[in-house]
Image (cartoon, rainbow, N blue to C red; front, top):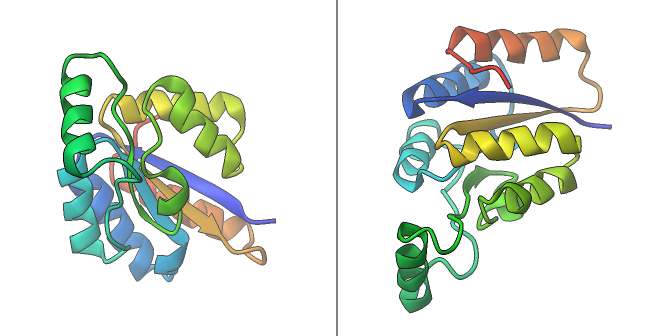
Length: 157
């Protein structure tokens, strides 16, 4: 069974540098994803690292998207997640109220308690980077990913 390693970053440059270091260390691009509510930050990360386009999810464009942005600005409805990478289709567009993103994360295999904490970080505009380790990966791959995240100022859960 695949294992997820997660890093939380307060600034897009730290997240981008961590992703670049992961790629340089041999982690495959298709195994790296990121999620946040900062669309412009994720677009920069995506462009700089090549992990895939930032996706907004259904209903975030056009007239409805504009109305949604007004509702978010007035705190009438929750903001939604922007995601890039292999997990983008599952995470993009998830409501950033605590339950919306958390449910998507739980569906991706993250324990509920951790998923709720990650959702809180995303709501604080932090960038969450996920690395899916391949089934045959050993503990050294997990340690390598964690070391890379720590070296790029990952925040504690």
